Length: 218
Image (tube, rainbow, N blue to C red; front, side, top):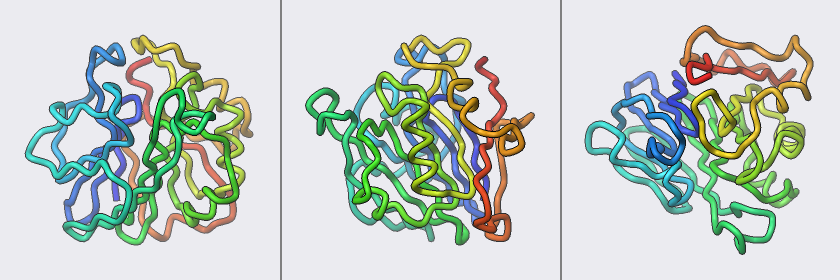
């Protein structure tokens, strides 16, 4: 299984069979830079804001998944879980959908623009998670401290942070450093590439590693 960071909260996840999903594609004007242009069999949308729902930016004719519940196609299992985009039960920014994917026996969880505080009820729905795609920039999502709490409660093998300020990002959100400072250096791996590859044998459940794809946008 391969995970490629396309910028912001967009990832391209490819199963060994070649089946591909893109999460939360974004409109360039909404973020400040263009998403890497790629194809997919399916696109998941956590909510309908312009920095998360630009299906037109994806090549091909992907199936669009934008509702809670179970979705299965081409050997990929997708489970959408409803939550809130803010700490006020949606009164500020509405709903958000978390997606859990099963690829090659690996469980990947994309939290979208989650804004609600970590709760036992929500965490119970998310277990277990191998790879957690986690917003850390605050303002419109959980911030670095809240993100760390999600890591501690979910206990994934791998965390890939997203939705943070980069060189060309025009959104009023925090930079990644605020999140990375909360973890020991030996648990952080910064890549020279925007892509990382996993298989089931890479996960031992002993610790959590923070993996940062190449920050080609600054």
